[in-house]
Length: 415
Image (cartoon, rainbow, N blue to C red; front, side, top):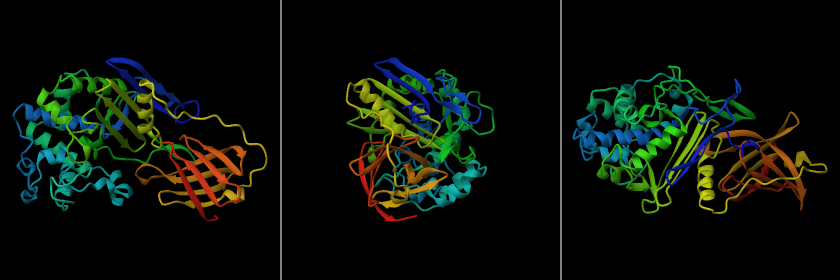
């Protein structure tokens, strides 16, 4: 995948306690041509939630709070009539609205310095999306409330509490809170794609905190999974609570599936996308960290686990270079299906496609011709393993996505 420019980042795979792969691929910084290594630090996005959840469970274990407590007991002026408990926040069943899904956040607020108090004040005046305990809706805002709760109960800043109770005792020397201002040696730069690799959109790191604001390495994250798996930090009762699914298959800081056979989580923040999978039944841990946010880290993580389990995996295919004239003008246009939208356009003697990916974010990237056969022009894309097969009569596009699913998109209009 790296040779075909489909992966850039760091990967760790462990099987039954033995690390069998731990390596960096591609560039940590495109601007300065620095390589990724096994020591490269990445912003880990929502993988942060497992640390925040563990901190709350540790406070419960110490008798300093109870998971059934209402959060208005710990956060001043939070509406008591809402009935939101610590358990609700941990399991995303609180109904607390998530500001990170609003257009205002992406267009304005993510670029502005924001204190935790300001975030909490904004969250607590917003109406709940549903009655607590009746549904599940993923909420970064809920984990910011937990960040404030940890500070109020412990009397320490969130970062200091984690440093004293988790990072130092467990020897997680390359893990911490990224405030965006202090210099972090070996921290990768975040990248996106628009025609080529570009720097990611700026985010002020005062915002994410205990929801999606940490950095780590694949090695430290593996240490962390072993600590949780083996009950080193939390007792048996708290460990069980963390890995027991509630609403929507979410435990505390982890998505749980297969009768508690696996725990996994993705982590996305501007320029970074990550996936961590623990398969308890098979004894596997797979960690995929990428500093190009178009990368399907979840798919790569799943494929690595399947390879270790000797199961078949769809691998990138080789294509023969296209022979013969390709009628570019026929291919250019807008294509749609019930699920997808794609815009194909010709610029600077290159064919580009613009398509939404994860979270609906748009990317524009080049596709290159490889085969002319059976009335189709077959292209492959840069950056992600996808296949585009255009009907040479200009009526439809057959698109195979990174997950191997085929979509038929009809041409709607020429550009």
